[in-house]
Length: 191
Image 1 (cartoon, rainbow, N blue to C red):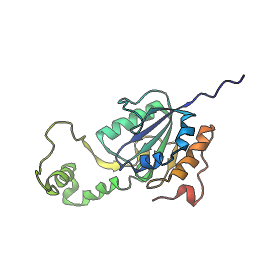
Image 2 (image 1 turned 45 degrees about the vertical axis):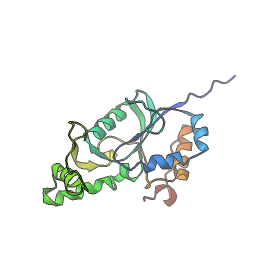
Image 3 (image 1 turned 180 degrees about the vertical axis):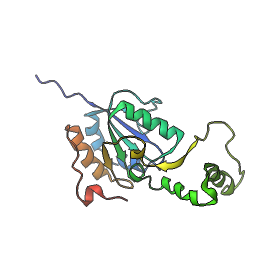
Image 4 (image 1 turned 90 degrees about the horizontal axis):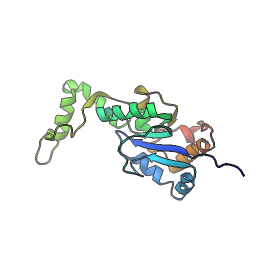
């Protein structure tokens, strides 16, 4: 009798992004059942309400850029607790749309406060005000950063979002204990 291969401890994380990568992940549809036979999902915004990132994670797909103190703290924590970190989607790989905030540095001095003023005061339809409760809006970092500028990353899965087909092609080798073959326009295309 052969002993079954232990399941991978699998996580997904959502930092500063639109959740499109996670929606594309859910588009794996029936293949998610096959994936579930090979992984234990130990942390994910789409699968559980676990608040603390666990120890001993084998693979983590990280969606989104690092834009605020909460993103930074979670990125550092997951790096410490994860064997294989994957930049999942263009926001994690390049900072993409969240990184457009970096262009604000050329407008009115571009302070973090000016970004908050623009979002909460200048663009408000009604009731223009900053949130009242302390800590309700995490402190913005000076710049929005792609994940690899904050922590070491082993693999990249570009796309905005990557298609379910591309995600599956990326994950299948990992389930076999292999590195995904990342070559050719179909696997490396952005956008």
